[in-house]
Length: 174
Image 1 (cartoon, rainbow, N blue to C red):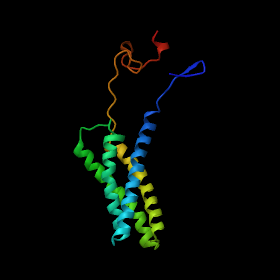
Image 2: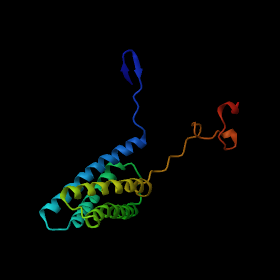
Image 3: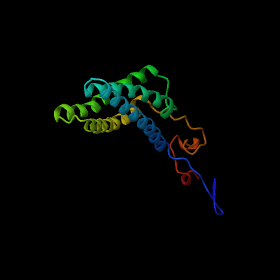
Image 4: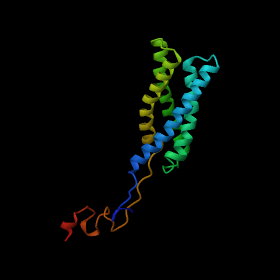
């Protein structure tokens, strides 16, 4: 408890969903930095076409992000099916890669927007659109939450033995 003046104020941790979003964002922001750094490095030091440079950068960031998600953001999630997890991660990452680089491809080859600034803007936009898909798919299918432990008899969420297995409000049990 924190003390403010003479009153004790309870210190509470943020809700689990908020912690999850913050951890996902921390890994994601780092992954975006890796993605953009590799993209610009490849684009400006080689003659590789812009979308190919972007695909290389996306693959590097996918590897970086998997390590960050598995061992930081979702380290408390189910680890029983690592092969399944890796397969789904790669599948959803590949879909995200297509979304991300599809935006850049359309801007570059569809509209002719190919300056370094335009490429970075549309690369960033593609990352943003793909991130929405990735957040949903990773938390739903890849890094699944562990099942809740069974509640102990007598706990508020456990049914009372005398109520036939149904949850009965406290006032009606008397």
